Length: 340
Length: 147
Image (cartoon, rainbow over all chains, first blue to last red; front, side, top):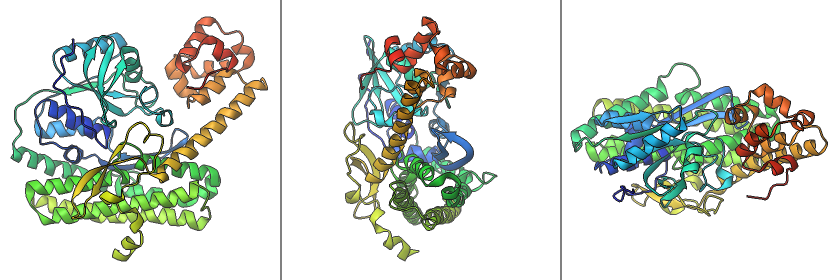
C-alpha cells in the first residue's frame, strides 16, 4: 500500500514553510528553500490582540495566519493546490487514504496537544501545526513533521485525533496538496519574490488599526509598561514568558522569524544581485538580535531576577525600538522592491 | 545605533554562537536555527535549546502545576468534582472541554459539582474519560499513573 518511497523528509525551522518546501520538492520543484517559501508566502507578521487570551496569556503572533504561506507561495508560482476540510472523520480518513494511494504527499493541519511524539512540555492546545503524511503501512501513517530530525509514524487513531483537535483554529481534518505543474522558471520565481515582499510590506506597515504590523509591536511595548501594576508581578511574568515562547519556541527559527526573513532576503539577492537586499538582510538580522535581547530582559522578569517598574519600562522600550527599526527596514525594502 | 548593537552582542545569532542549552525538546529532537557564518552569509545550525526559552516554558508549567495542585485540593475538600482536576491537568478550560466532549459549557459547570458528578451516567463519564485519556475508575479516584 505504501506508494511514497520517493518522499524526502527534511527538517525545517518553521512547520508551514518546511511543509511547503517539502511538498514542492515532492512534485519536482527543487528551487524553493524554506526561506524562499517563507518570504514568497509573506510569512513575517506581528499581531497583538488585547482582550483575547490564549492559554491564559496574551494573544501574540509573529507569523501570518496558518495556511497562508502555502497558499500564497503556490499561487505566486502558479502551482495548483487542493485544500479540503471535513465534517466527518470517516470521510477525512478515506480522502487521505485515496490521495496517498494516488501517490500524493499530503499536508495536514493538526493540533499538537495529542501529538504522540512531542514532549509533554510542548503539548499545548495549539491547532496550527503542520505536517506531511506521505504513506501508510498497515495501520501506521508515515509522517514527516518538519520540526523533527527524522520521519515518524502515527496510528490511524492518533492521526485522527490530531486532525480533529478542538478549540481555537480547529483544523477540522484540513489537508492540502500541490499538483505537479512542470518546471518553474527563474523569471517566475523572481516575480513571486517581488510579490511576496510587496505583500509583507503591506502586512507590516499598512494594515489599519493599532494591533497589527510594526504598530502592533509598539502597542504591545506600551502595554507591557502597565503590566506590572495591572496584573501584578507574577502574572506579568507569565505573560512575558508567553511572549518569549511565541517568539522563540520551536517553529520560529529564532528571533520571531526575523532570521528566516533575513535568510530570505539573501536568497532573493541570488536572483536579483542587488546589494541593497544584502544590507536589508542585515537589518532583519539586527531586528532578530534585538528581539532576542528583549527575550533576555523578559526572562530576567519571569525568573524573578528583575521586577521593578524600571525593568518593565525597559522591556517596553525595547519593543518600541524594534518597531521603529522594522518600520525603517520595511520602508527601505518597499523602495528597493519597486526597483527590482 | 551601532553602539547599541555592539553593547547587546551576547544575542547575536552567529553560527557558532547558536545556543546549545539542553531543554526538554532537545532530548527528543534538535531544532533548526537560522544563523550567519563568518562571512555574514545565512546558513542553518541545529540547536539543543536556549536557556531563556526553557525558563519561559518552565515558569509556564510551574503555574499549570500549581493550578493542578489547587484543583486536586478542591476535589479532596469536596468543593469540586474530579473533572476540575483533569481539566487543569489537560490545560483545558470549559470552552475547550466543551468542544471535545460535546457537552455545553453550562453542563460542564454542573458536572464540576461533586453531587452532580456522583450521579453521572457511565455514558457521560466515558466521554470525559476518553478526552482525558484515563479509565472511568481513574477519573473517579484521580489515581493516575504518570505518563
